[in-house]
Length: 258
Ligand code: DAK
Image (tube, rainbow, N blue to C red):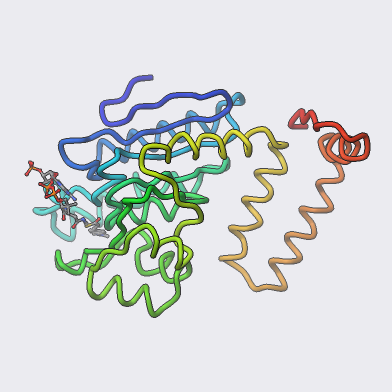
């Protein structure tokens, strides 16, 4: 399938989605977010794919919601069309892991998109901000909620109330991103990590993602109980037998995703 605002490739068992609206620094238009929803659904449903990478260009991951598209909307427009919820949240419904590879600007909705992914790697020149306050709106896709859970109240309040940008080092230091790479090698290095994840047992990968995400939505006791049940369930898979046999026999595991 071809898209107007995305470039989608497969690299072995990894799906790579590049947001591609260079004229608008990948601003998240209705077309882009709708196409991204379709691309994510297709990769999630593809048995040959085990992990997904979402990236933009060296200048911009995404410079936020498309301001030109939304500037004249009124309350009824955004409420009735379910703005954001309708086309922005497939990232949170994707079962396979999605890694954001962020070069350049990740502002407003761009930062929120990156936070909807399961992991975030940054290029040295990445820049994050929640500048909605400068536009007279609040964030609408997790800028006050996910960001606060990622980096804590003090820094989230600072970013949301001032709109200031943080750089790649600050993003890694405060836990927004987990690894930093040179700009030119960010996507290549992210693809390597994605390939490593895609080579593990698929049911185990999905269960790990589900368990970590559950920690954001429940108490510690319930979360650990959920984790324990998933762990018990893993003993019903062929891949558990294979993984442990491979360790004992000192050979690489050959997972079958069963
Ligand atoms: N939307 C539309 N076009 C954008 C854009 C955006 N967010 N960001 C950049 N562009 C366009 C510029 O207008 C320019 O187009 P032309 O003028 O050439 O036609 C082109 O991309 C290049 O941008 P610049 O010329 O500005 O490039 P610079 O290198 O000088 O500056 C910049 C780069 C990223 C610092 C700057 O472009 C910038 O500040 N962009 C806006 C960043 C921003 O404020 N993003 C947050 C958007 S708000 C909700 C409602 C709203 C929201 C959420 C929920 N609900 C109703 C629930 C808001 C969400 C957001 O994301």
